[in-house]
Length: 77
Image (cartoon, rainbow, N blue to C red; front, side, top):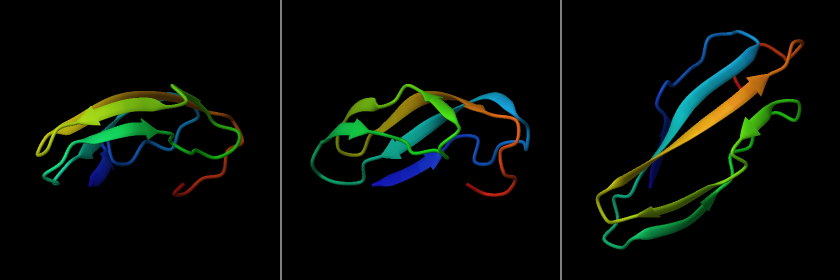
């Protein structure tokens, strides 16, 4: 299974951002379950979880919106 964010890296700005979580299924069996992204404690993300069902060879795209508060540490998270 391969996971990526569509945008890759975000600009270093406070406030609201959105991205797409992409999950590819290279297996010969379907994947199903719930993904719960974990961001730094002060960040607010919606939705809290993404339900997914991915057929063999397919991929899943789930939209995520999150808010980075002022005063958040710079750098990779």
